[in-house]
Image (tube, rainbow, N blue to C red; front, side):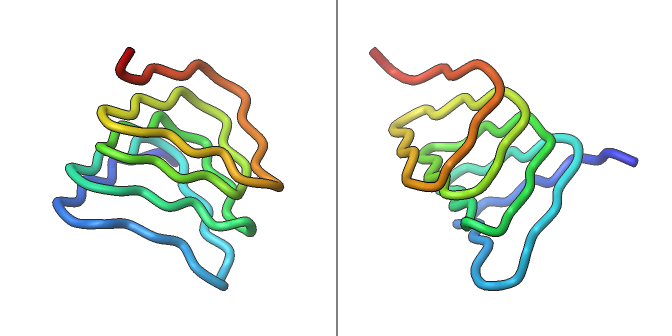
Length: 79
């Protein structure tokens, strides 16, 4: 089942695997660790990805894809 996760501060997945289905909406920064598997649309100020994301990313300030990141989806960033 999917859901919606909203956070006002930074959200970070560290050493433990994180699995999220649905939508992530953060005012600040979302860091997706290398063991994370996300099936969701992510909207945040800054998005840093090392894990696997299936879904669209809207980064209002900045987006970083760091190895071994995998992304299947659309990206929207400031021009």
